[in-house]
Each structure stands twice: as structure tokens, then as C-alpha cells.
Amino acid sequence: MELTSTDLSPRMGSQVNVTKADLLGGAHAKAIRALLDQRGILLFRGIHPSDEELRTIARTLGDLRIGESKRGADGATLKEGDEGVLKVSLDAKVNPEYARFLPGNHLWHMDGTYEEVPPLATLFTPFKLSREGGDTVFANTYAAYEDLPADEKARLDGLHVVHTMQAALFPAMRDCTPEEFAVWSSYPKRNHPLVWQHRSGRKSLVLSTSGSHIEQMHPSESHDLLERLMRHATQDKYLYRHKWQMGDLVIWDNTGAMHRVMPFDRESGREFHRCTLNGEEPIRAAA
Ligand code: OGA
Ligand code: MN
Image 1 (spheres, rainbow, N blue to C red):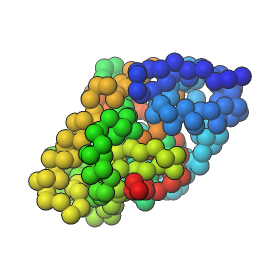
Image 2: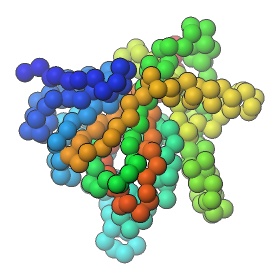
Image 3: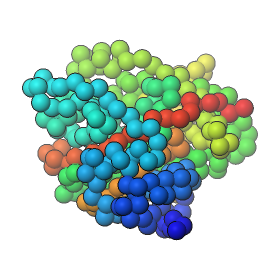
Image 4: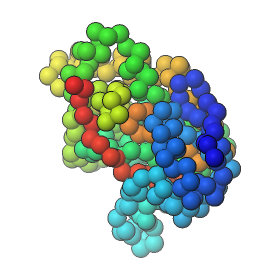
């Protein structure tokens, strides 16, 4: 049977009609991967996956990222990605290691821009929703590139951006301690092309708040250009804003899209479970 879907916005996102059994069995895995590449995010409603089911679905689609199996200070709490499922929560009791990095999720970003091969995609499902706020918004960075004038495309194709943890986190955590700032600064930086020529031949902008500056460009020119591109790429016409329902499973493409979470009450207990698929190609500069 062919996979059927409905567009969620003209240029971003599709809701896919598929049973949970078919998702678990991988019946449509190839078609789902192709649709994810085209539409940036896929929504499946009424799935209610357990952690085990989330891992199973992830494995039908790609290479599931497995974290380290270290225990937290109290000997009980699991670290990021332990057994392949990360609990995304601002509550340090739920995720002691990572809660303090998560304020960065409020700003436009791609995940893993510090890695040579950034993650391919993330599977995301709510465990507890906030009463208000907490929508996740996605921006199509293929479409944002496609719409640029030809001369600008040619100019951007040759540029490289340095991505740093402090660029990603400082704007979201201006009240950080000097120690926190020092920890961020100790993270390795990563240089990526500004325009990604994917194996498929398509090109996308590699934009993220982690983008600190453009190499070999005056800092103020670099700052203005990155800011202008970020404004361009996050215009309404490139976005899909997701209002969560329990049972949703969303898969986002981390190679041709940015995402961010809208504000919500820190005390709400908002918690999502996620599986990450490892990347399959480094960010290659446009020829
Ligand atoms: C993430 C992320 C957004 C959200 O987990 O990488 O950006 O809606 N999450 O919590
Ligand atoms: Mn993220």
C-alpha cells in the first residue's frame, strides 16, 4: 500500500497516515525517509510509543544513536541517550546532566553542529506537555536557500561558519555563571560550510544560533550577514509550528531544517522522549 500524507504548511511538514504496527515493522521505512527529506518534518498522530517502541521505529529508519550508560550522582538517574532514549526536560531531577544546556533549545538551531557529521534526524514524542506554550517550530533551510537570488547563492556557496557552544547558549542564558561560560568555551568548535551540497544534489543553508562567525570576514560584516540570513530563513513562509498532542510522534530532518521550542512554564514538567539517528554524510561545501 502506498503511503499517504497531508501537507501541514506549503513548504514544511506532512502528516503521514500509517498504523503503529506498520511503523514498528518498518513497512514504509524507505518512503518515510524520502518524504522526510522532501518535507522536513513528519507528524504521526495517535502513536503513543513506549521507549522501546520509539527505539524500534528509529532502527527501521536509520542508525540509532546510543549514549553512554553512566549513572547520575544519585546512582539512579540515566544520562543522555542512555539506551538510545534521551529525556528532554528542563528539570534537573529528570535529566541532571543536560537540563542546563537545554535553554539553548529556545533559539533557532540545528542539533550537533559541533560534530563533523551532524545527526540525520530526531524522533520526538511527548511524555508530559506544558499546559501553555511549548510548541515546537521548524524552518525549512532548503527552501530558504532556493529562494535566494543567484548572485547571492554564488557568494554564499564559498563561505564557512565557525560553530561554538557559547554562541549557541549565551543568548539564552545571559545570567550564566563565569564557570558555566568557561565550560561552554572549553567545547571544541567546528567549522562548517554555510551552504550544504547534499549527496542528493540539493543545497540547504547551514544556519544555527551556534554559528558564531564567518571565517575570513570582518566580524561586523559576518554578524550582519548571519543575522540577515537567520531573519530570511525564519520568515513565516518557511515555517511549520507544531501544537503537541499526547500520542504524537514527530520526526524532524536535522540536515535541511532548523527548530526551536516556544516559551513554556519551567515548572510545568514538560518532558519529551527522543531518539536520534546518526548522520550519514558530512556537510560538504557546494561545488
Ligand atoms: C531538542 C529540541 C525542542 C523541544 O530536543 O533538540 O530542540 O520542543 N527540542 O523541546
Ligand atoms: Mn534541538
